[in-house]
Amino acid sequence: MVKEYKDIEFTGRIADLSEDDRPREKAIRHDIRSLSNAELLAIILGGGMQGKSVMDLSREMLSKAHNSLDSLSRMRINEMCRAFKGVGPAKAVSLAAAFELGLRCRDEKAKAECTVRSSKDAYNYIRGHLERLDREEFWILTLSRSNRITGAECVSRGGTAATVVDVKLLMKMAVDRLASGIIAVHNHPSGNLHPSAEDDRITKKIKEAAQILDMRLLDHLIISPDSYYSYADSGTL
Image (cartoon, rainbow, N blue to C red; front, side, top):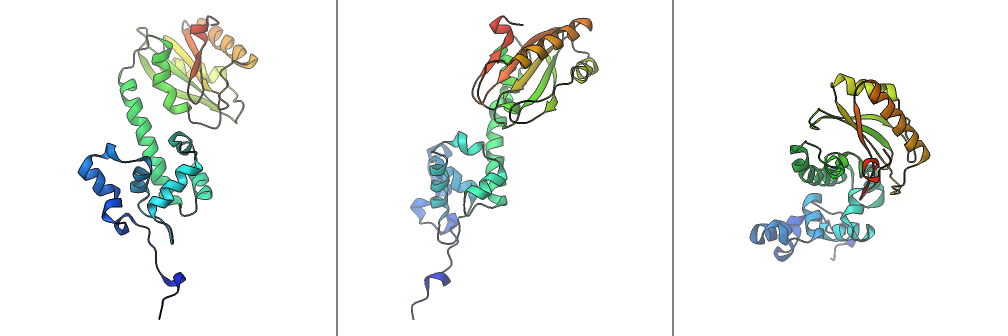
C-alpha cells in the first residue's frame, strides 16, 4: 500500500540533504567563503519545514528580500516570523544574531581606535548603533581634550520621523563624563540626509550650552542607512 503524501515526514534538515548539497561539508572541504548566501543561511537556520528543505527555505527568503542580505538583515525578528513560513522565533533569533555578529566584527576595529581626527572617524565609531534603525535616536559622543572618545550614550528615542532632545539631559551626560568636546549624532531612517529646521535649531542650542560649560560641540552627524551628513564638514556648525 502506498503511503499517503501527508503522512510522509519531511524534516528539511541539512543532514537529510544529499552529500553534494550539504553546505557544512562543503565549508569544511573548501572553506566557508566558498558557500553561497543561500548555503550560509541554511547553516544558520539548521532545518526547513514539512515539504520544504532548508536550502529551499533559504532561497525563498533571499528571493523575497530581492536577493539583498542588507534588506534581510534589517527585518525585525517578529517581521521575519510573519514574512517567511517555516521561520519561527528560534530561527529568526539565530539569523538576527548572525547579522549582529557581522556588524560588531566590522565595527570592532573602528572602536579600537577611539581618537577622532575627522567626521569619518566619528561616523565609523557610531554607525553600528544607528544606521539600521527604523526609528530616530539621538546620541552624543563625549571626547577628551585630545579628541579621544570617552563614551557614547543615547539621549532620546523617538518615532520614524522625529525624536525629542532634552538639552539639559544631554549636557548632564557630558558633564558626568568630564567631556572637553562632544559630537551630537542622530539618524534619519528615511535616508534623507538634508538637515531639517529642527536639526539646525537643536544644533545651535547644544553649541551654546556647551560653550557655557567650557566644552566644544565638534560636530553634529546625521546618519542614514548607508551614508552621513556632517555639520562641521558642510561649514554650518
